[in-house]
Length: 576
Image (cartoon, rainbow, N blue to C red; front, top):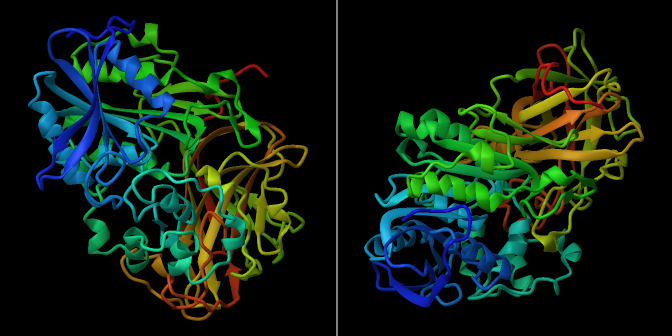
């Protein structure tokens, strides 16, 4: 079978084909084949979201017209599939059984690839370690990482959007979630009763999530990110800078480059990062910023080129077909640099060209709000500086600019209103004297203490315009008592100074001359994360809250700093 970048076939559908699992549960799949005799490379998507979305129909049709078969399957317990639905629990076995069935069908040439977005990306990834022999490649789009890494818990804090998602996928079909007055629930306690409050009275999923708020054996059963050394297939990793599940891509790509089972598979990893939210490649606009016409790409063609090579053994001239840059055969990474709004190609990521640079915080003890005196500098403190402090009240958490119904948390939104709060510490560089290009992972090394035994610390990287506009780039959270391990807490002694790392994920941006690099530090971001009660109570059962006094230190030996990957001054000179 020869795949062709131009449509060459009509589509022959087979609707609601029942595929048996090892326990005799029947899962429903729609199978679309080219109207030609023979066998074909097959693309598989396993989804909890249904298959009747017009965009999905268009995508299936696009690939089948070019010589691929496409199998679209409802996950166990969803839509036309039998069984009981519970996220994550059955995907490894059901995916394997589905691939086994497809590989034995006369329409399959023995080569299967998997793709899909978000949860579908997870169903692709969970098949990668010790994969079925017929699985030859995957293209996970904005995939979920290990559940305890990001959803439903992120570094110990409950990812509030999972309440919304849990209701959205409750039952056999997707639910209408717009009827819920979400803002009225931001301070609702106890968390374990939230499901009942929004109408999921009998949700076994919610019950299990509330019982398992640490990385225990129950969660480890459905994790995959510790198994990169057992993966031996090519992978095209795709996400956006504002994808609220982006940590999977930021860790999976370098994890595979360093640890994949063979040198060949290490070399067969590719990466695309655009200026997109979780709904990737749908709009040039993300929050308050329009990233211009280059922001959108022909993603179907990129997936086609990848699958053609690894499922059909056909290598097309990418530099002639793709709109993304390929300046060298080893340019396996195509990355959009915001600000300048241009695509660039690199041999690896994190970028070999980048220089890890520490930006230390400074103040005279009053960095509270944008009206304070917080400074960000590459110079470390050389003499004692008074620490900064604030009170974190779980009943009045720092807002997070978002619309929870959209199932998207984190966009290029203006943070000026947030930065006026006294419980937000703000540290900024002076206006830059020249452009500064940042591209890579972002971390904050925080030296802090609290009056409470358990609490959260948050961090946010911001691009400040000359007119004061403050655009969020990326953010993160760390539950202090899980600073050493997600498996068990190490409680704080009152005012005990500890060092912890906040993973702020990643960004790629040209900070223009006259802009400022800004770091925000606080202890809440609601409704992105459910506010910590500042007690030792079970977080799902806690009803009582306490105000915590937080202290952040910046002195010799106790330096707090932001860590950025800075590209050399000569990088990608552009005309301005």
